[in-house]
Length: 369
Ligand code: MG
Image (cartoon, rainbow, N blue to C red; front, side, top):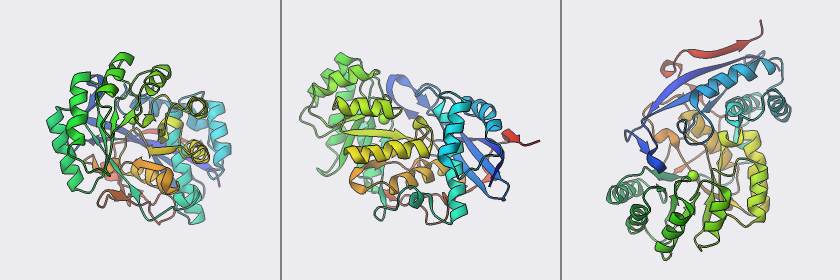
């Protein structure tokens, strides 16, 4: 089997709540997502999705996905999409870094491998663990009372895991954490995710002010060293996210005992192949994970579901269903949340079919001439 064409469509994903706000006043109203297609000489076509959280979250931006695909795609024509390690090796030789650019191609090739073998991607990634995957809800940054109200609403829909967007004014963030925890049952889990937004002294103040609250602290500061300093001054369970972008940082953080949970985002790590490698290492080292992506719609949600469902349940801290946050459905067959849980499809590959009617024109189209 050979890759004969790589193409990409842009699709806008407006938010149901109107916008999504997090640390430092960053906000997005409409996500700019890229749907990547990989065509083969057998007629099989696989799909992936890459959707940065705006241009100011990680070193990734939506037009960068498309520009990077134009750069890398000519190097992959004629290669076998089922040979995923070889394909990733090829991508890394052709384009240094830019993990997020490679993510959509890698996901699409897993979709092809699944279709070619008749197996769902989660089974190819190691097997289906348990019946369903528990989800968290991210709560956009607003006034403490509004966030508490939203948590109560989503809790009534079945969610039991919540990730508060903090990383703003520390005094307000302290109120946010107290107000939301007060709405929850003891078994519910609450994460305060500062998305790098606090300086070190602010973070230390916040963790002290909530020291008797049952809350996880996620990525309080910009640098790894600042986060580690805060980690050593708190007894809260601690999550690293933005700083862990590959194996090197994971191993360093493990050696430093810098985290209890790590947040793995498929596009941050460069696709399902590389995320699986990090995921399997976390399982071997006993580190639980939030398994997700930076953002996306139905195709991203399907990829997350397969990744999460193929992870032992005790190491699955949370995942999320991005397709329920947005108003546009970019594919049929994606998992749909049922009372705070989702399941990976039983169909071969990712189990999705893109809704071409909602996609914009092909902005990338590279084929053998
Ligand atoms: Mg995070």
